[in-house]
Image 1 (cartoon, helix red, strand yellow):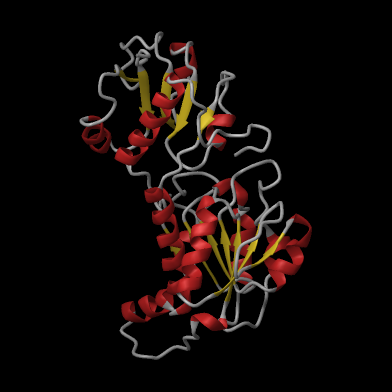
Image 2: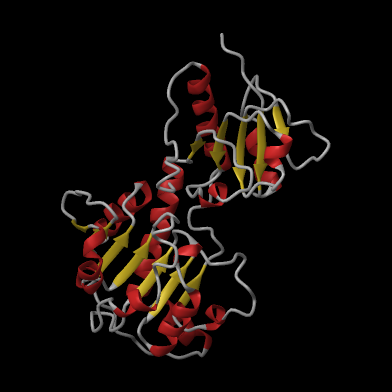
Length: 316
């Protein structure tokens, strides 16, 4: 029977969540905590990581596989000293469901004027606002990977007209899709724009002043809305603030930011019709993460191919 090699855990999650998940994880396998500088990591073959310490690869020179603690991997690809080993993305039903729940929640919140009604509640104002039906709005989803596809499906269940954009053409039954060369046509149809893109050289800063001006004006909400739960580096926040201030955008829901945590002096905190969550749209279920990693380790040790391996050239 193949040997069960040691695994390093270096996750910047809540300690109590990690402790609880580890109680039932990695049976028969030595688990090493990178958070303890006294621990010898030199024999570890695997690492489960989310924003790991910069010296991890020096402390663990024999790593053979890296497991990302979240859907994104851009933070790994930019780490100094990154070894030439497979990087496995976290793909799990819980992760996907949490993301699509958040996306649907935000789309419905803007549809039903939740930010405006909360403002009226604070001012003790009783005034009914216009609330169109979901079928009156087109939601454009940028990024049609696992997370994007599930969000598309669930937005359609809620009655929204949904279209999709991805760099290469994808076919989705019942959904009109656009490819990289058709971005302007996609944006011109979009009332609510959902960003679920990975961060790559092509997508860095893609949500900028030029893009916002190409969204449909005069739709059922009056002004377009921007929702981003992909990667913070895909949005230019100064352009976003300017678009909200000038009325090019009528609102936004943001879970990711150029720099996290979002600075206390950011005007986004106090901008009307903006909803902010602290990179929590698709918070990883640590138990599911460890189950996923353990399954992949067992496949690797049995000589089977790893699943959901990152294409370093594509960046995801």
